[in-house]
Length: 126
Image 1 (spheres, rainbow, N blue to C red):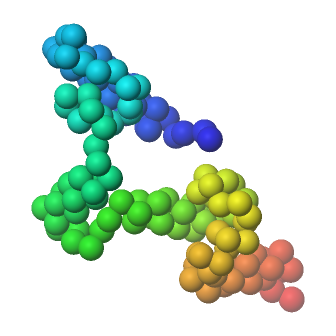
Image 2: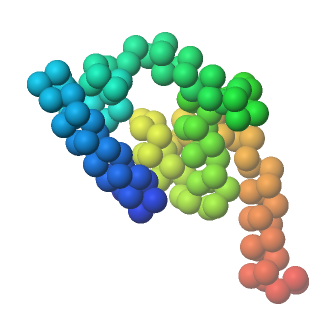
């Protein structure tokens, strides 16, 4: 999958910070090639990530937001920006584009109007 440049830059910065942490821990660093390990290099338990995410969401005034919300938001923004549903489906890892279209069918009312507008423009208001 292709990542946007903003994500690539953030990941490069994060890797540099990880390298500095690795040096600070020295021999105590247990490199498991994790992207986001705990500060001591061990993996997080899934429940810890979910709990931490929830805590941060509440602190920033976004209660009810959970990690899966990021996935949903990503797909919604792409579809609303007229990214082809097949591409969105591939980014989400869905086996078939129909799964993506079924899950995000709530977007179709505005997309239906946009389609009608495109036809009107193409036909010159006949």
